Image 1: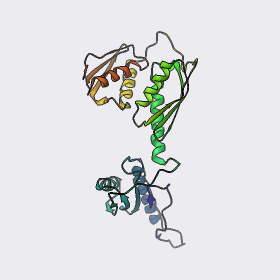
Image 2: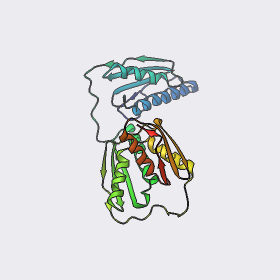
Image 3: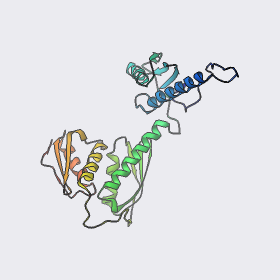
Image 4: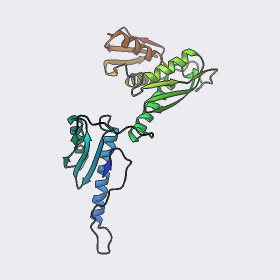
Length: 269
C-alpha cells in the first residue's frame, strides 16, 4: 500500500503462498511484483497530478483490484483518482472508498520537496536554461538556474542591464514559474559558445526553437501561431487574443538565436 504523502515503502504483510521447501511459490511472487508495480504507477501518477498530489490518498492493489481510500475536498478529485487507477494496464476494477469533505485541508508542505515538486522544478530549470542558451543574448550571459517549488533563482553574470533584464523576463514567462530572483551581476561575460561569423542556423532548427519557446511561454498560446523560417527570417501566421500577446510573440521570436528578422504582418489580434 502506498500513501500519497509518503515515500515509497514495501507492501505490508500480504499473505504469501509457500512451496514445498518453505519458499514463496513462483506464481505468488510474480503476482506480488505485478501488484507492487501497479501500485507504484498509480501512486506516481497521483504524485505528479496538480489536482491530487496534495491529498492524502492510500492505494492498494491485489490481482488487478484496486482499493483507494483517504480524503479529498471534492467529488471531481475522487473521480479523477478512480479514472487514473483504471487507466493503468492490468487494472480491472477500482473500489473507490475516498471520502469527500468540502472543508478538507491538505497536509501542510514539509520543509523537504516531495517527488512531484522535484520533478517539476527540474523541468522548469531545464526549460529556462534552454531558453537562455537559444536566445540571441547567449554571448552576454553566464547564467546558473536553480528552481525550488516554482521559484527560480538566476545567478552568475550579465554583460549589461539589458541582458540581465532579458534573462529575468525569459524565466518569468515560463510555464510553472511562480517568482524569479534575478541575482545576475553586471560584469564582463565570457562567451558561452564561439560565434562564427557567416554561419547560419538551419531554418528547421530555428523554427523548432521558436515553436519551443512559444510552447513553454505562459502568455503565448503556441497552438494559435504557425511558424516558418526561410533564410533566418521567421514568419508568424495566426491570430492571438490581444495586441500585447502579439507583441510578446514577436519579441520572443526575435530574441531566439539565429533569427535574422521576423515577418509578423499575418499575425493578427
